[in-house]
Length: 274
Image 1 (cartoon, rainbow, N blue to C red):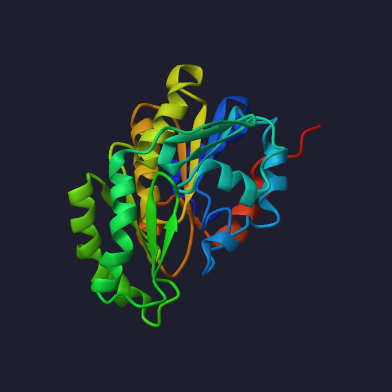
Image 2: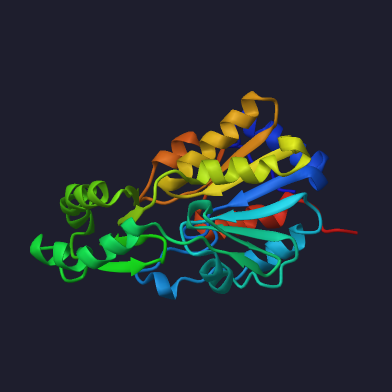
């Protein structure tokens, strides 16, 4: 296996623990920006062509594979080509939805989502938001994207307080991301989703935990890895690096070059099964 010279000592310990006892390890991943390249149109996103094969090879070797994403779980499964991977669990909408062995569990959305959905188009119009700003309706959440705008960061900053006020009125919270502001119900984040998932396995003490992410919403999952490390569970925080978000890189044990780097890491993580 190729050496990873930039791996932190804590990350090296986590990686050693995964390789020493993979059958009890939990590997977690974000979707967009981590397993799938970021694109202008979220509906056009597809996983890196090597992602599903790499996960399929790892699935029978490790204790659990989980994808924790802001997307609806079924959409992540479709766009990732993950339907045939035995043992893979997808926690969508920051953990509110669960896809497990083809079974999908989706809760009813809180009333604030419907209220925000009805008000959002007029709010964007009155606020003078660029025509290129658009709304992605996730069912349990609403995401306003500015990536297509001529000045995406300027448009995002202008909308931040406006969408914050709408979220406050409707009982939602704003989750910032890579040229996106998402209005979603409070009370769940990727860290909580990951902790809950880990708690289901080996009494909450797997042999090791890895989480790979790229965006601000993944910081909560990194927090979960740190907390389990403090409790004695080795962990690895893997960052799918980009020039758009640097906060994760500062917290990561290892930074790789986008989804292609994540796939390359997974292909090297464990030897092929004999």
